[in-house]
Image (tube, rainbow, N blue to C red; front, side):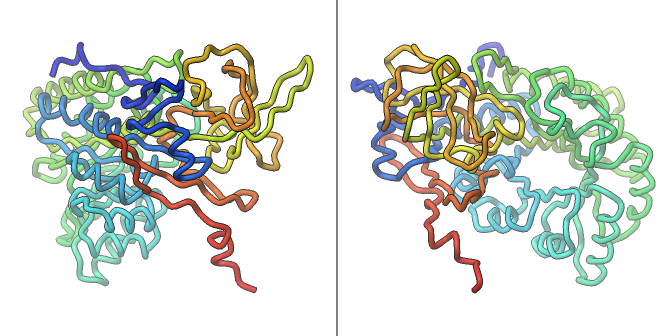
Amino acid sequence: MNPSVSAPYTIQPVSLTTAQNGHYEIGSIDVSQLIQNHGSPLYVMDEQTIRANCRAYTDPLKQFYPNHLVVFAAKACMTVGLLNILGEEGLGVDVVSAGELYTALKSNLPVPNILFHGNNKSLEELEMALRQSIRIVVDNEQELDNIVMLTEKLGLRARIMLRTKPEIEAHTHDYIKTGQIDSKFGIERAALMPLVRKVKDNPKIHILGLHSHIGSQIFDIEPYVDLAAIMAEHTLRLSAELGRPVEELNLGGGIGIKYTHSDDPPLISDVITAMTQRLVQEFESRQLRLPKLIMEPGRSIVGNAGVTLYTVGAIKDIPGVKTYLFVDGGMSDNIRPMLYQAEYTYDIATKATQPGTKSYAVAGKFCESGDVLTHSVTLPEAEVGDVVIVFDTGAYNYAMSSNYNRAPRPAMVVVKNGQSRVWVERETLDDLIRNDRY
């Protein structure tokens, strides 16, 4: 694979086309047909895009660093159906809760390809992972002590990686930086070897290697090259302390994606090429055996595979101020504009061939003034009943959805070759009161 000819990460799903009637089609299905069949609002995932994004990682890694494992960061979007596809593409998954672990265990993913993350895992969660012999990425000393206690109590052996702060400042939103010194995640450099010494001779604790992660939605290649050099040095220290080669090195994920036309993320293959070349250089210069390289992409696997479809319910024009386009969803199915000031690309999916002529604020139906998906976007002239499409919603939209105002969560469907199948059923009103007691 030649990185210079790799396809850039697109805003739209790769199967998106425009039909003769002027409607968008995804997976060869008209968007209006999807809403007719599955309701509105609706999360739609494109299988073709998911598989292409998986191969954007696995193809260059096969060429430049064959001993690897790509694990999907489940927090971006998690369903059993999605994990089954990822398993078919050779990926594993990293999870951060009992719920995510339970979902992974219900999928067809090989159990050895599951990693368990988190900065405050409960004893119950740790036991759940230990009983399945799942890699545990240790975040802090208390967690390590808990694992030691549980292995003695249960008579089980733990396979662990130690999450290390690389102390790299990535240029991204403050809320999604994780590699800097004051991050809540990971072990500081000075504390790493003392923790290793606590357990290196414990026969029930097997240290596989090190983990690191510098953040999310990163548009620069340089931090990944720096990370490779820093973690090679940490690996040298760990190998010397253990008296044996380090088996695995996890360099996290975080490669940014294109949400708007002004975004300019790097090619995934360019990041992998630069990072693995530096990693090989650093290990060879230290005469170290190359460990298995683990990477943890999340949004770059599912982001542009997903769109959200809404139906316009009302239009409110405030003369001289703005025109509101009210849709039948909002902050309960996409909190990111309110939480991160996240920006997306919008269109009228049932008027795909018409030019944008009018500025709208696209607002949700929830009882909050802040429930506005975008304050200004130019769209074709809208009418009640039109379908609004929001691109790049495959990551963190369903995962962060809620029942605010007691709204049922939307359904999620996956499309391919003219067929759609449900990955997540639409919640019903009865679902909302299922756990109420009276």
